[in-house]
Amino acid sequence: MSRTGRVERGTKETEVLVEIDLDGTGRVDVATGVGFFDHMLAQLGKHGSFDLTVKTTGDLHIDGHHTIEDTAIALGQAFRQALGDKSGIRRFASAAVPLDEALAQVTVDIAGRPYLVHSEPDGMAPMIGPDYDTTMTRHVLESFAFNAQICLHVHVPYGRNAHHIVEAQFKALARALRDAVAFDPKVHGIPSTKGAL
Image (cartoon, rainbow, N blue to C red; front, side, top):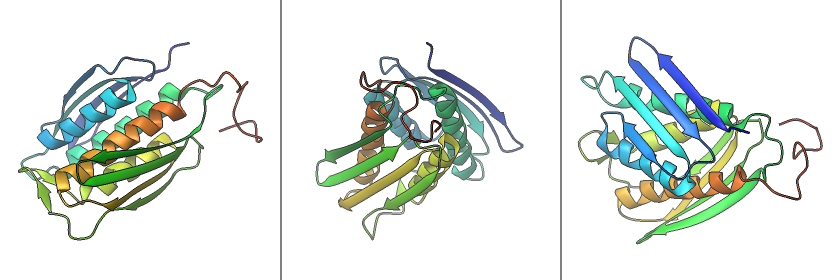
């Protein structure tokens, strides 16, 4: 069974192509025009062992907001598509990832009911590099979770360096998603008493 998703999304602000293979080997080909965001998407593919292609062109002459947001929406839609009926998956998973002084904890439920809980340390630097607004991290996670239809809790209890704080979140998300979508030999059919996710 192929667990792949492909989404093309076009607006007056952006053109996005996302392709994902949940059973890949971590091959990534990412270009959004926002360098740090490309780096984060590469972490997601590599540490999730997902083959991930992302090609986005957007109105970067304004700022990176629309490009980042619309990419996250398409990524969530492609992820949801790749999950299929979710038969046989573990469904629940969590991961804690340190990056130097920062720690990120992510818990996920492939639930069919989108929800996000997100917390970061106060006083983060407003920008990483020339074009990544650090307030966009929550927006990326929210857009992804709602379009993937997953319940996602992301908590960074401590950290000082904004780059480390954000990167740890993407790496922990990758590891949690990797485990949640893995097949469990003890699970037969849909892992829910409802019979649907």
